[in-house]
Image (cartoon, rainbow, N blue to C red; front, side):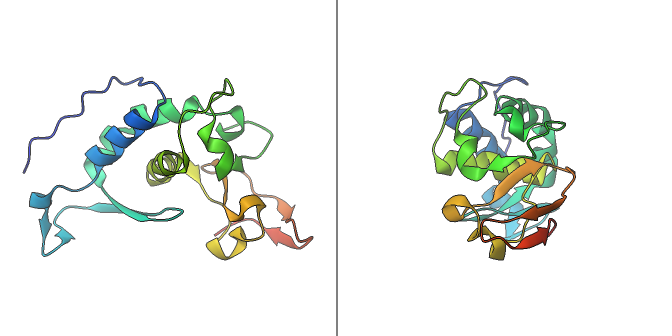
Length: 160
């Protein structure tokens, strides 16, 4: 196997470059695939535009880094916040109101968070078109999901 090493500290700055570095580190190397299939356990995550397959051990190795970067997002994405999460579109702004990335890097942080069960998308993809911007609502993993009124007035009990 390729000897890959991630040079980021355990408390990396929330930036598109740092998120990308962690994402690439957690993906499979060519020598970990046989006929395009992983030879070690994989964590599969459905993203907004792309699906990802992460190397389970390397993803877990990056838990503290990913959790730290997610902690720099708005409080609405933190466990215990009463707001109940926020739109995917709001994830590109940090807790100081500064834009740290674009949708691509936001999706990368989201799928890392989902793969580590730090974040989740509580409603199925078919419901996204009813949400602002046609993108999912993102919540901290394990958040309560009360019955919610969606933009079309329909009532829906959260959950996959």
